[in-house]
Image (cartoon, rainbow, N blue to C red):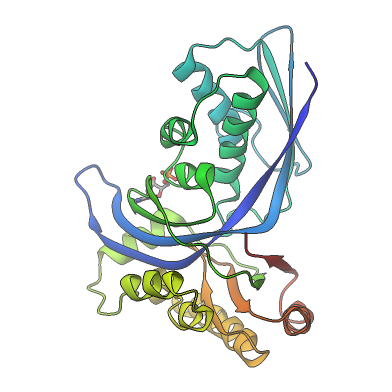
Length: 286
Ligand code: C5P
């Protein structure tokens, strides 16, 4: 069978709210998500034999079931009962790892879409999203993509009117954040500031990019350890100073992004941000 290439776009959080802790240990989320053109690339090929053989351009990534791309392939086989023989996945990472942009979840979603295409299984995006739920909370959104509201654990995805096309500069500070640790810090506090999710949705409905940019808000910024919060704030201010309409952290971070309505301004901001951190990207919203 001919190999196929699939793109796995990164996501941004236009808003991120946590409503409380659930009985199952997860948290009840309310997030407005947006896909961007910065993407990993996957090549999938099916050959005679058995098993999943994953390779990657990043030496430090696990290549077994701990990698969400491999986990997705296994869940696809379990859910559909289709024995596809030996699957080779060649993963070229371009989206920073552990950066709050759902890179791993998007790789998993790309594998589900790719297998559906390669094997002609004809599953709907909703059916693929259901399989994705078993792999991770963000995978269903990554299967569907675009502009969407994600609720529940993150797996209840409702499409929203598309964000008016714009540019984004994504800058990843050189520190990492632990997702479980940030959730735990959040549990210990009563936060008064929450995003205006309804206002964000209204701004999307009226195609009001300024209104969207004004309402970018991520509740996790408030619970970052002091020094890390300072760095995130510094980067946001840098992007705003360079002409971003709004700026926020994505997911559990540490990536900070700004939205721009003009490519030239975004390019200048990208250059400026590169004096501050190594991993900076210019992308379009999808
Ligand atoms: O679902 P996923 O494996 O991506 O979640 C990773 C971790 O993030 C979970 O183990 C949990 O600690 C935290 N999480 C959470 N509530 C969510 C999603 C994730 O507490 N809705």
